[in-house]
Image (cartoon, rainbow, N blue to C red; front, side, top):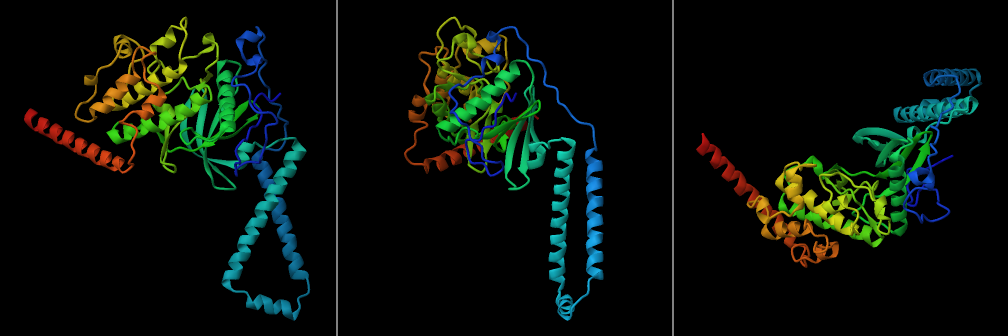
Length: 418
């Protein structure tokens, strides 16, 4: 039984067009995945592989058959009587025409081997993986308990994409995987958002699940020297992504530097990984918390009614706070509680960031979710809302000037210390 049906709500040139007969109405998995369904445990999937010719032996045999056919064709050409016109054509062939003929022969060779591979696959009952058939692994983008994310290239269109490969197990990971694929499909059906990582399709092969998504160049966690105009850009882009999520009654619940990606192609920061995302109408006991370094304190006390949208704002504020102080945050202890009791403007580097930016981050990390700023208020703030986009250029210049002044001060301090 295919637990993860193929979805392709966007027209993707790298895979066949598939359609979902019914729109995704549920954000979460079917009851068999949830512990509320009962104590029944699904049996692990066993792959049935027929014994037969190995892949290398199959390729060698295919090449041998091709060579025999090629040798036979050459003999037919030698033994066949030639006419004066044929001799004249042979004499008129140039070096360029011969090179073209060599390319045609190579293409024909590939076609013969591909057809023979399909023939052997049919005889042996072996179905070739769509992942191996259509994509080439270029690089490893990330790995963790969920599996691996690869940078891949489509063999037919040369399109670069990201594919998350995960082994299906009978545990909570299944719920997160199905939740992410269904959430992405649901959001795609509502329209595109440039600040959310675009999802193309997903499919299951045996005990492996593959999610095909757009490729982004890096996460914000890969750097530690962000200027003010860059922090402002991240804040504005991710807030736009959160507005789209919250309008669809979905909360992310796992905002952190690793899940904020940058695309050089679009020039946009994008929010990724919806494995823990939840419907706002979801029961409180079904809410899962993400990384403890970035969660709001009220998520630990779920006896009260939660405003899940405000928890996303707090997580984004903590993420930007970490980028600004350029230090890793704790997951517990006194410092963890101090941050959640409220930070002050003086907790930021004064020489690098303006008072307005520091004040806005403090409002996002307000300990009281009721008085905490909303996503709409963030975009309407005077610091974020800019009528003239040319002002951004001045912000970049100002950030570089502040950076230069700080470097000069550090050099002077080192001289005095020596």
